[in-house]
Length: 291
Ligand code: SF4
Image (cartoon, rainbow, N blue to C red):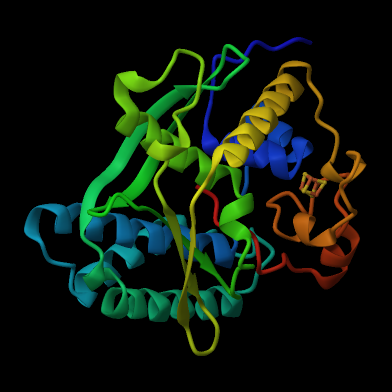
């Protein structure tokens, strides 16, 4: 059935880009997901940092560790799945809780003091060139220098090329570029590269010795054209109900890591890792932060 989209969010765009079947399960069939240890850490750290920069914008000061931990704990307690609902053990959650707290503490001590927030939760919308669909989203944090900053938690470092490849991050950069350009954008076009800000991903890596990885990127005309082409393909794919698993698409490898990071890895018929996970009796601990 043809489905006419009016708007799409950066997360939806990225989900389809990762796996069209995952998009269908999450946004059309609304198959419920249960937080894994990794996704719960992501939610709790994100909430604490969001409040930190929101308050710092007015007060000029970062939260102290107790205040940040309270927010972290509140999110943790409210979302912790009952029993073995996620397939992870109580020990897995305990380990994740502790590692999340450590890396949050490190970030507040070493990185947050150097960030001067300018805009928080900045909403944006812009037209995707070539289709009658708007991209609607929110940038978490833009600092005083106009750099778009995104936070991720992970149990290992991200590849250096991550900011160049992540559609969601490019959406945030374009979203702020639209704000900067104002009326200087021609209808149906993206802003000129001149207006697109630098982006930075702060990855809070929860290894035994936690550390903060900072990856930066700037985008040029080629990146914007690539974005427009990919976003258009995705919109057309959704509107024409193309929801095959990612590994059936041309030029995509059968990469089990994609399924390992998927919330539906244990229940999806096309999962490349379902049998292994069910045999293990556990969900992999590396599900992506979902927000
Ligand atoms: S388990 Fe794999 S194939 Fe299934 S929806 Fe998730 S990413 Fe796609």
